[in-house]
Image (cartoon, rainbow, N blue to C red; front, side):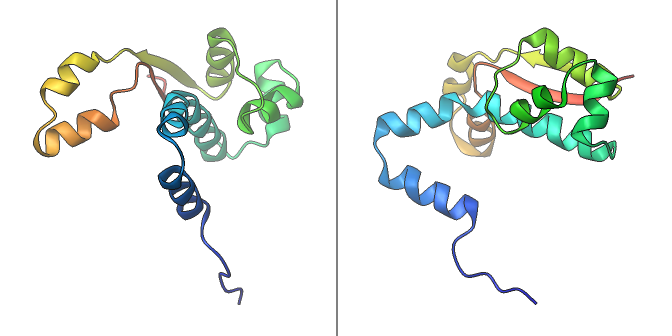
Length: 129
């Protein structure tokens, strides 16, 4: 049985962000919607038990496009995200959240939840109706 020898990815990320500059933390936060979109697509692909190659064939793109998208090396057009989501029988939803309202309600548990969701764009891949 393998034993863990070092910090997890999340622990290392948190350490680096805590030790880093405010500018680093801000830049990392700005990438949140992109990370969320990538994670949602990877989860959807895995839920459908598709390989990158299978998904690429269904979506009419190359396997390299799927790979670059999933590893963060490529920022696709919204149309490409929609095309890939449709190939898995999902749809893409884009939501703009008013940060002013989020800040006004920043007290208590509701405020904490809203701050977590207060990015300018939120991507959510859900099963199509």
